[in-house]
Length: 434
Image (tube, rainbow, N blue to C red; front, side, top):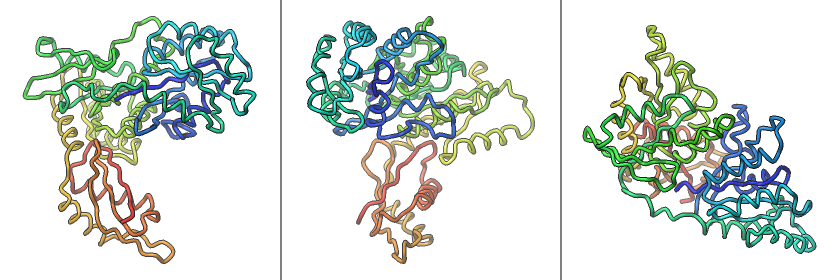
């Protein structure tokens, strides 16, 4: 769970091309519309059945007139903090530069796996030149060409061997809730309100990584882990990378959680960065409850609540079936409702819907509204089943699955949401050949 690969290296060695190849995307998290380009440097990838996240740290360099060295040092430090494996990319065309030496010097001192990828190796001669990079003292080199993909398979084979096994989840079966959101929306206050002064009832156990703390919470007949990622950052180096850290921090927390409590600030409304975090939660197929904090500061006009909620849902389209709770962490307003709702979403996410009930209801709905025919061919859906995945996914078996379009998929999802308890849970629908 939560294996993160960080790509580091100086500018123009092909980090972004490698990133795009690994995540098979031209843009990672967000749609072009949101304008938050920096977040495009986070993506999901999978190799040999192992899922992992990829971060292109280069995307976070703010060329604020400061020297490259300083920027790269920050990138590397950041990657060291957060990643499970580090991919150090160098360029065979330019050979070893002073900057490469500097990065290698930092990487030699750490106890995390570092793989040295020598990029732009696309012929035999360059293959020979790549051997020069053994001088960096980082062990084996992996000659690749991120443009045409040669060598990346071998690199990935070695890469995934370094991942920690997923077996180390302590307290299996106990729900894990993560509180995520942008900086300064009140995450720490909410955690303190939940855990309260009675810290004796919680037994902190260190999470799988040192930067998210799992706190076992047992009171008021609840039993779950709270993933606490707030307040773990050494102050100094945060200032300009605050947004970046919050994205990383959220990624880490989201990947470890079952249900994410996404906290937004009522006085500021739902902002682009909040929507990005919501997309992350959906992409990771985790449960979600949206909490509007500091509601006590927003003028209690009549009907504000309804209007506010409508606005949020519009911005979150197409996924709108999740609970929204208006809270004040400081005044402990509706805080326990948050826990009850999170529990409900957890149960919605882990339920197995009976196949008979699923078929009876969905096949009737399909009969009333069959999929549109394609070039005179009729599409018939015969059977539906829930797949044995960790988050709800469903397979619809049809004679011509390839002709079923997105709008029909949304129709099916909406019908399922009307009938079955799926609030707060992103679901996946697949069409398969019968």
